[in-house]
Structure formats: structure tokens, C-alpha cells
Figure 1 (cartoon, rainbow, N blue to C red):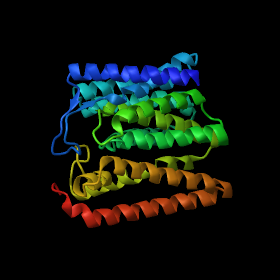
Figure 2: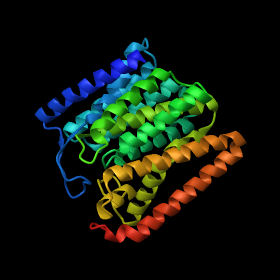
Figure 3: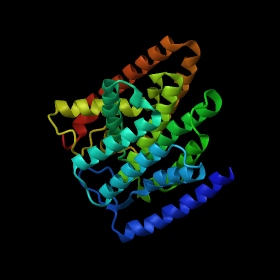
Figure 4: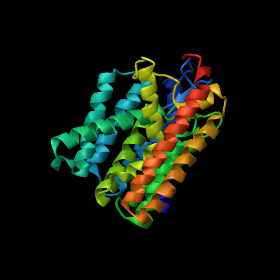
Length: 321
């Protein structure tokens, strides 16, 4: 408890120092026609996520070395991208390398090459989808807090699978970040360094849990982001758009930009829907695997229906359609 309190103080001070540096170095997100915000805001506030993980690493006698090394690599490149945009190739190669370090930490290199390739593509895709979902105040911090908070509950009450201090310190960093971001007028945005690093951390923790329980159904913890991201990609392909280019066609962007709902409200909706799904998932585990997978199928079906109904009803309001 004392270490978490000390960490929270250090992270608050670190964040405030970063604000000064970001202002000095002009690391600022300027609104454009693709943005969901209207004010210039400091970018890269999520830098405290990897910093918190490094604190854990130092205080835990260097636990999860390969994971931390991959996190540092992917965070440094993402922060560089926040300061000066890098090519897609550089980002992709870095993500692949970092995920391979994660796989080494998880002991996956004993599996078949085909499985490793599939998981590599899936993990890089999830990291980038998580990054693309970071477009309004509070959504990354709120959604991530629900997932990692739920994983901390699972780790404490259901099955011990990860060093609890790692989750504790990341949750503290999310609380600090949310204080500055989860508000109507955000003091800072997560930036690529924040969204990419928290996605990497989340994937690592989920990966440990899946391997510990030999159960891939825990991916349900990411189902809200997953459905929104996949269906948005399909929608953009149907519109013959370049899916690697920035856009405002995610459902959450439609709710904010076209229906004029507040950032905070939409972020809360995404986080609460995911929390309800997780709670029901954990209850379904009491009745066995067939109930769990049936539940996941029903959840995906309902989310797909909600997405399609919303797009059908409101997408015509989109000015760039």
C-alpha cells in the first residue's frame, strides 16, 4: 500500500513535469477536420503508463524483463511518433519486435510457427485498433481501467496469474491520467505513447491469464473495442477508403461529432458496457465452457446489431461520408 501511495505521488509529479516539457517542446494536438476536439491540448500524457511499469520492474527485482524491454521499445517509438510522425513501416516493425519480446516472456516460441504468426498478426492488430479507438476524452483511460481493474479482481479472487504489484501500479497510473483526461476539457491526451503502451500491457496480462487457464475466452474483456474496430474497418473498406488513414467513422466518434453527446458520457458508456459484459462473463464461467462461448456469441451478435442500427440511423449525418 505504501509503495502504491508513493507511486501515485511520483506519477502525479512526473505528469506535471511532463506537461511543462510538452508545452516547451510543442507536443500539442491541434484540432483538424478529423478531430473530435476543438481546443489545442497537450499530447503524450499517457507516458506515465510505461513509466509506472518501469517503476514496478525496478521495485520487483526485475520481474518480466523481456516484457518490460518490449514495452520500452514500443513506448519510445510511439513517443517519438507523438513528437514527429514516423512512417508506417517504422511503427509496424517496432510493434512486431515488441510483440516478439512479449511472446518470449510468455514462452510462446515452443509453439508452432503458424500459431506464432497468427498470434503476432492478431496482437499487432489489437494494439493498432486500441490506438485508433483513442479519440475522445476519457475513453482510453476509462476503458483500460475497467479491463485492468477486472483483471486485478480475477488475479486476487479467482486465479493468481500475475504479480499483483504490476496491475496495482498500472491502475494507479490510469487514475492519475484519468484525473487530467477524463473531463470535459482535458488537460492532456494519451498520445500514441499512452494508447499503444496500455494496449501492450493489457495484451501481456491477458496473455498470461489465457496461458495459465488454457482458456482463450478471456478475450471477451476486449469485445467492445473489438466489435467497434472490426466493423469500422469493414465499413471503411465498403466505402473504398484507405483504412490506415485517420478518420471519424468509429461509432464513438459518430456519437460525439454528429449526435453532439459529451466525450465523458460516451467514454462512460463504453467503459460501463464493457464492465457489465465482464461481470456477466465471470458469472457464466460458473456454468462451464459451453455457456461461456454461447454468451460471447450472443454478446458479439448484440453489439454488431447495435453498431449496424446506429450506423444505419445516424451515419448520413457524417459530413465526410
